[in-house]
Length: 353
Image (spheres, rainbow, N blue to C red):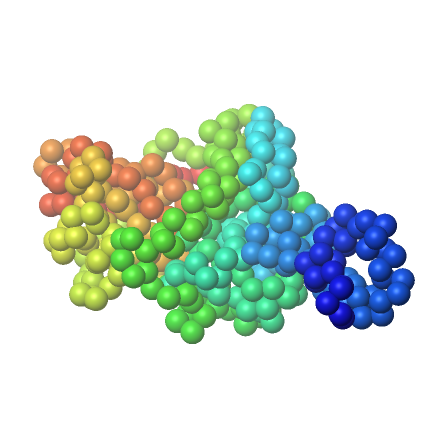
């Protein structure tokens, strides 16, 4: 290229717009610029390989026989959805990893989906970092384990890819206990860490997806011959366990930052059925207790955490016990429940109609 040749940025504009007659005439007599044009054409479009996967329409999708998902598959959501009285439009499509064995209910397949994000630099120690060789998509992701939700296969367009067996095992470990340290992001550095806000839009999206199931549950009499009963089964009582002094949950979970205001409880119904929760007191935001599910396994019914004190009984809303889920308990009564006499886990049983 000589001093009279256009700059590379000018040739990028040329590729985008088709260029001027003057530029086209220049290419006829300049071999260097012609070679540069060919080189620029061969480069991947940064918008297609960027962090937001903006061109999800280009992903090749498949639909399994019977629509049954398999653990480790990566499904792409529908952006527009209209089914059984539920209608929504997501801000954008998201990729979901099938994290648990699917179940058949209400004439469709349901699975716990873990959303994938490509801003790997925002990963914390609760996110699983999946390298490019960890899936058939050949891209780096962070699996946002705390945002796992149960969704229906009908809410997705189809299968976009598959995690490797190793990545599936790491994800299972993250759901059951903690994400393996070698494959997780860095711990949060404090209450002003910008990564605390990295999942706001993603949390909104998975909340919309989860709304479909809650709608069907509320209208179970119309949608399914199986419904959840009004009576409760007490699974058992929680036992308090210790929290290490240097755990991030002690430093960040409660606004009061007082050790006595953060407690951890475990309930073990059997070797394969257990739940561990951390309970923190949020004084300045309305005097309530925040219940965070740290780990859980073996539950296929909705449950609720119930606290008994001398002033009465308070409970969370029914929930599916999945790690990372957070719930509010007893707004206005948080302080008195710090000394609750008994903590229990109740299950809402299924009853045939």
